Length: 563
Image 1 (cartoon, rainbow, N blue to C red):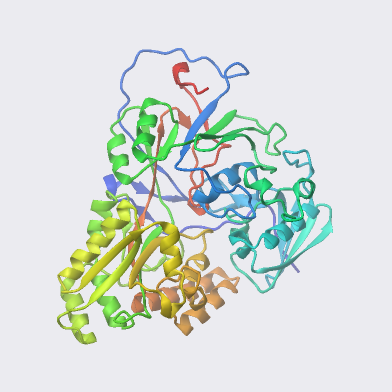
Image 2 (tube, rainbow, N blue to C red):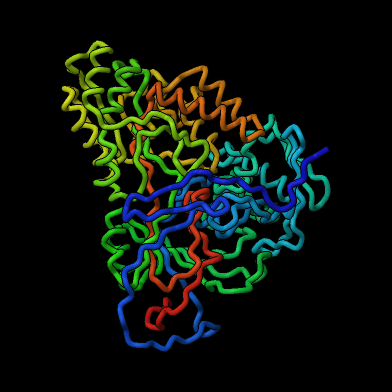
């Protein structure tokens, strides 16, 4: 007998989170972490008559991006900077997350069934759904979509790895056959990477060529999805404009914007200025802006908990970091308090507490944390055979201010141990290429990246510590522990969540002891908007992708309308 999940599955976050800045608390409500709004007192101002929105006054909301996405093809794009924010709003998924929670709700699938052994997922699809081109969404399109994603063989295809095949049962029923039981599968399907339905077969075949049979070149800057908004205009280095799709299956009852526009704004300071002037409705920037802009009575600052932790990776294959005691000593030489409060202005949580962030299960509360403790670091170095330090490490890091400052913190701590850390700052592609080399060929002792799961499950964090990911993947520490590899495989193939918690807790304890990474900080997302912006929803499970559909403005004076 199969277990029927009518409409939704609830995944609860169990941990309470306290934001460091201002002592504001975020409390989970039925699986949701609330977003704290920091607002200055509203200044008195003369009454302004605001005309209603309509055909002669469309509601347009301006957002910003630092650059144009390289593609908006959902079979290719798989990062926020790589186009996911556009893809999310023009395409759709079978299931999704409800609001700011991790509760799974229907989207293009109305209901689903999971076989007792977890190897078959059967979805009943929503009828009457149209693509922007007028094509009809159905089971055949779901199957075709997987074929196209796998043919592209880009990062989105990797997220379909556990799925062996898709069977079309009838026009509105599909069955996904798994290679093995895979506990996080519904979370993956609800996620932001590689799970979008579209473009449809007829649109692809109409643009296909002999050299480009899947029309990837065309869909690099065109779309044909079922989402609430359509791509209306794309002027590179200027703006990306979206307009409502009138036949959207979710309908247009309630308040929604007519158009959403991404303005390409390369400089964070310009972004901030445009928000302050009302030229942009919603922006983002470094933590210092959150403190400064919070004083503006017309601006709301949103501090949103995230699954993001910053990892400084320690190359376990490169001496002397092949010695666990040396790695542990380095973990004690990093000033976690200064990282949180001086670099991130208190917008986040203290690091040093293992690879799982507080906002995700299974955060292990009794895991002994690493703290800034030079005396303990000296004892560990002596035990490892380096009582006086006396060696040099090298570091490669993406050239971003916050990351430079983290490296400087580590340099300062290591200097007090008579250890020299040299640093080279590069672009992300160079950083990734150097650290993506095979385990014994990675040329640097220390590197780092922002580690966050593309779906809210520990599986997508721990894969960065699997031995097989040490070449080409994000296991930049070249960490190889057969016991950890075995436990990670057990965790992903186990359906019972309580058992998965036990398995992943063991992984956390082993990794904390082995010290292949310094978990520098768990940072929050900082967004700022004009106070007239309403129902701006941010979901940590979607990597904070900006969702157009629920957002509208109310009380915006006509002089701030966008053309």
